[in-house]
Amino acid sequence: MIGWASAPFDGNWAFRHPKRAAWMALAGPAANVACVLAAALLIRVGMEWGLFEIPFRLASDSIALARDPESAPSSPAS
Image (cartoon, rainbow, N blue to C red; front, top):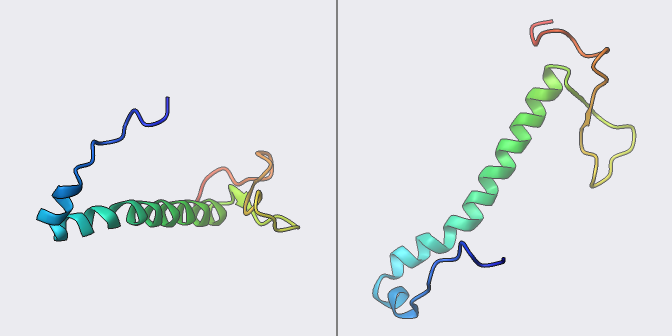
């Protein structure tokens, strides 16, 4: 199951195209940073709109908690 989406690797290709290889090597970490920034933005917007709240105790598994639906405002403008 693991490795179905992997691309075949040609080691000589990196020697022939070093700039392309460098850009390809940066693509994975750049995608991770983009995902982190998107998640942080969504959490921030959720907190501003009252959908999330800061937990009483910070832990790696609870950075933001979903609010109780009854206590959340009905619209973002509220």
